[in-house]
Image 1 (cartoon, rainbow, N blue to C red):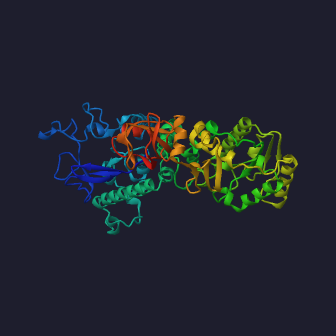
Image 2 (cartoon, rainbow, N blue to C red; image 1 turned 90 degrees about the vertical axis):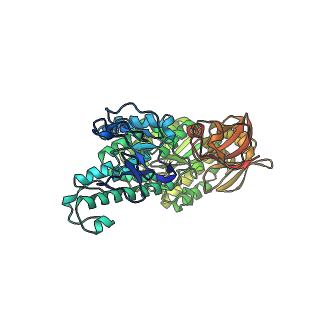
Image 3 (tube, helix red, strand yellow; image 1 turned 60 degrees about the horizontal axis):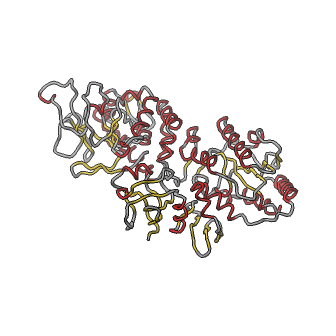
Length: 558
């Protein structure tokens, strides 16, 4: 839910996520920053009304963009709807992760999703990545001031006691001067927050915010609690905002097992996946460091053994891996199968073992194979423990010459005279169903597959319906392919009666299929007629609520 935006106030623009700095004589805001004041100043900025406890002539009600309720004050009067969304009693979230996560789920599951979300008091540098991941857009400098007044030196890995530092672990202008008074401490704290938000914005732009969050939460148990509770209790909300095509990432922590894109992969397998038609031998392989697996040296040797056996047409190759669980060979280009990297120690922890066992049990139970072959390495013990009536050909060393000979011999024994067969269409159908649900299978009806892996075209006669590319790892639709999906009313964005000129903006969207995720190929339709085909740039909820912004990047149109 983290996003980059532009906040415009009185003609002055600020890139979000950002910090609104208190601007008073005692605490002047950094030059050029978004400001926060009690009374409207000369430059555009946020204004917050005084507390009811204030005295003097300024204690009257202020007409402001932000009011006392943004600080979570139970004494603030009811607030009218404004340009900002706020979380009630946000300070209480510092002590209650369950309450905090519930508040995020409530506000991001409502129409407030589109409004900038303001966060007071909580925005310390080491929290900014997670808070942005939760959807906050604007923070204030109140906690930075409080920390300076209390002698706390802030870092992106947590607060430190300023007086205990023999040398300052920072080279910002304030620290470089070597002065340790409160003024310089506040300047450092502000610099640290500004720098962290720059890194957060960069992570968002590269599609790697979750990776940054997982590294930052290690500094504070409260942050770990929040992230884990978000993953467990609001998966649907997080997943809706997680693109189906992302950047390469490192899965290096326990929390990586619960990344929304990784959990979606496992759930989508169970909900949509069916093995390629005609396959009846399941062959379980270990993963490889190089992705996609087919390009690794180990998997080239595995595939040579399969080809030499003459059983390739009926063998279903599936990779057992953490954190994804299983990756069928025909899906190895699909994000995140070719985009993750993990630390390899040779030891799987209990969560990884349980996950792999559950996924393998699901596979052999639902897909029904005549023979299961385990050709695994580190995964061998936990996986074999849940298999019945199987052949173990690896002996724990899948890449050895002896193991490869065992594999080839077992496959040859069970293959009979099947030959290699043509698997490309069956593999493509499995991928299309995984990507688009049942309607995806219609793309392959009466079709043939042309080209050379990984760039394959789906052709029906001389008509191209779509194309799989190695770079994207998904099927990109043509107008004819979009019509196939539209005939099943799947992955459609409904518009009013107009022909899109250029990209489709949210103001023109009337309805969007709830299955659509950012990065999905979609059909743009009006009463069943396909007007365009393109790639979703918003969630379906955002498409229907928003009045600005690009909803679909159009590739083809009438």
